Image: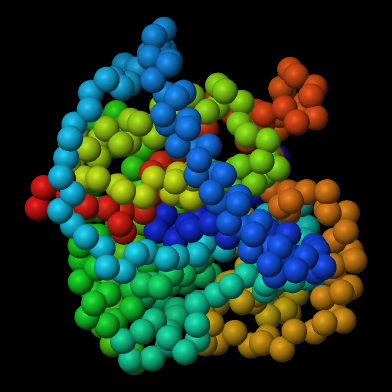
Length: 398
């Protein structure tokens, strides 16, 4: 099997970024783009909730059992709970849509890298003015944090934090690669971070043998970091792949084949049962962006290899790879952009750059029996998902 590529998504930083056509059609007006973004977000949320409400309860009979685990979900049990916690600062975060070309990373030439750079330079990023006292921690690629985590590149950002792909340099049982969330240093952000850590510790320790445990993104470590801007709370999490939203975009919004929907929803419900019945936690923010696909270390290495390829070719890193306060290419070369855009016309037929990992996971044209042009997307029966982002979660009882 050929190497696959990874669309990395950090669990706490996955609010949808729908302006996926901006890099291939500069003629779309601001109002048209805004209207399209709002419509697509509302439509996806409606369809996802419809699946939860209608598909899940209809398929509880004839469930399969494997390794002592059953796909059956008791959908009749409803518990009335009282929400105690009130959020005054709603989480607002952004996960970069990382483009993984179909080539092996080592074969990427200058044109390939320039295309990637053009796309990822157009991603919105954190405000460089927030790198001040009480704000973001200045981080550079190659930094070693806590004497243990080497920074490989930025994964995403939010109002509270930036998130970095890091390599664990120690052989201490911690995964080789983690997603490290570094919060702003102001007291209000430190308090929010401690609330999230309590929730994450609960999900990690309550019952690892529960069938829904493996469908929750887990915390790896937490510690403090000191910078010129103050003391920052850091939370390392297991690395995950693309979100369900990215999967739907990859399908050109045709939807997912019913068997795939059943498998995904079954895993979501198992995760929610673990949160509700075992941990007594209410997620409060289930949506496609917070349902992430599990991937392995090889895909992560391909993303790191792409970062290294920029250095090998002598090109500056895209703005989505580095902290906003140290991005060196702030003046766009419009002539270069137009040249890259003209070479990229071959992908105009797709709403989203083709990603090899998602393509191999969802190649409905090759495997789906129905030849209809708008047929639902086929999803591998081996797909595994996890629920992410407990930043807005709360306890059933305080």
